[in-house]
Image: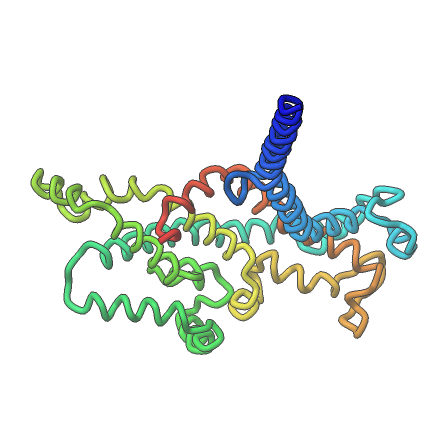
Length: 327
């Protein structure tokens, strides 16, 4: 009897141990050894990222869908995301309304050359503020931060008067010359990015180059600037996107002649689309006649930056990690 009781007790203890181990195993499988190891955490992260991705992609899906819909599909409330009939006429109207070849050339000129000029000028300024010693260095850096904090609405009036006296209004010089001098769109931010990167570099590089007789310019262009290639790429892409999408400054300084795509888009409703003159009324944004061409025009405008980003996505991500933006 004692033996049978011992065997039963042993079986109960073994069962409780096994059940406890199974419980620990399932608990570890569900929750994980760390916070993000278990399948519950992984499912939660995937769902969260899916929702965030949908919020970002939904406007682009709506834009592409609306740009391909015919007028009948736009009026019919039954038609959802997928149009019944793909109508390319919206893109034809948008192409003509934007004067796309001319406006694209104007926008590309400002965005490309302005970005290249900003990379060069901001890199030189950031290196000087990070490495060189000269009187008033801290004052210049303070003024750089101040220009970063001051909104453009405060400085646009004196800039307009200066450009008018110089004869630069409605020409690309209003953006290219300031970019060449490190005062383009968000120029102060780019100076801070380069300054933070050059501050993180070891001083032994400079000391070794100076011992070999390298001047400050040779040290910068032969050693420091190649090391800052990741920061250069980040600054170039940010500057390119901001120049491409600028509207407020372009409306005041480029409203005639040299017209970029952003201004053409705002004036598209004033063009003749479908032999009807569209005006800015109370319900102009809800007009189904104008909705298709407007979405097609917006898609044509964002397409070049999307292509640039898709090509440079890997280098852009690496540049974000390596540049001073992570400081």
